[in-house]
Length: 587
Image (cartoon, rainbow, N blue to C red; front, top):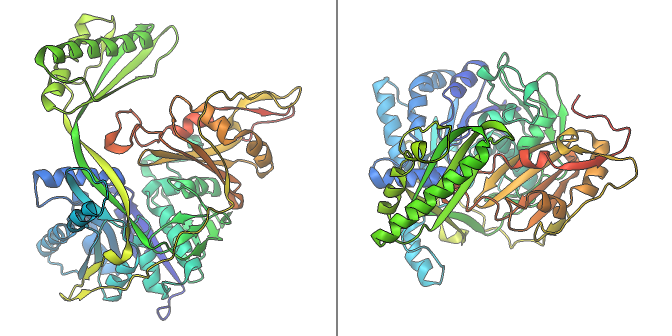
């Protein structure tokens, strides 16, 4: 541990490319920080960066980072706040060059380190020859690196560290390894540091954003960005700047803990396999939560690699329709557009759509309003250009009350993902140090994957044919939201839904009724793959992992909710049986 350090304060300033510019300034002015970390690289973002670099080779990084640095870089350097960001995307050297140019304009000379080595494009021909079924044309292929390169960069004295693809939590864990001297084999500590990073990697989601009980979250306009105050023993307190909005509470923290994880006893990261099943969340004062209990095991011998590739084109159109039977009118309009354009394709000798999807949003019984969402995919741009021209005529051709046409929809390349595992010994991360030298940190080889842990509580292969009766006479049905909080997220075509009991005493009731089969049945129109359930006793929660749930996920999906943000809301409407004397836990 560095002399005199007994705690380190880290602020999570961005959760995605496009996050508010409020976060960095708010944290810098009110967070009393040692580090400001930025996470820009959602899986969808890598697809967008690949598309940007196709158009302009000098791009391919999160340009928002440079815009934000224009406001805060000078103050951060003056206050000794170090910056770690995965803003490099698929062009980290380009990002660093842009930051150096900005710093020069402001008369600053920050020590900038760059982490590379995640780009595995040069390995693809060999992997293809070895039998890996790669897509024909790959636009990018990047491994999820860990925290050791970030640590090496900070060890060199860097003020700013820019990485390409790394796991979201690594920007935080690397800082903690540097500050506290945690070694690559300190697995419990690495798991704790990874959890600290996980709780702040999504910006305001770590401090009350998207909370189930949204009305309890004050001052949305000034939502606080999260801060972790970490100790060398691995425990930490989650908080936010004083006087900011948002909410830091055990329940809100539990929702973020469950966000976008799979098996909570076997959460795979490059540096450690985390076990979060015993984590506890306790109030530690106003807007503060003490987090303890993470455990870790040796990492696996592989990195996850996310590749992107172009596969035809996509377009999505919307129309608003009001009046009686608005929902039925909206669906018939979408079907008519598809019928009309398919006839046009046939006359032009074009193939049929490769995929279509209709969502009717906001439909109400009787008099109401509905939004038609019609998304389509096709191998040829020309076909979708014809599609886009046929949306506006719906306003005069069919349903009365058609309005809300926002202009002709665009056609864009359909950039999709292909993921695979790659042995760690085939990749060597490289850290370009501020003095021009290079460091090549040693990466432990990892160990073979262990057997599936005991947190796994069943799997439902399908949601068909499952019915649930009231368990006892006199019991009644209430929506799940009366007993639980929930948060959902995505990993490709998989959506996970974390469910936390509002009252620990209700956990047995939820365990009995929220079976994988029951959840699969409730979500049968959205989930076509298996549903698995895992338990987290420390926070009285379950995690449901739903496969084939997002129409391919990300930019491959034609759904209105391709990232699964609404899946928890659908599950919170699921009826559960409660005894006659039950009172809502929402009070």
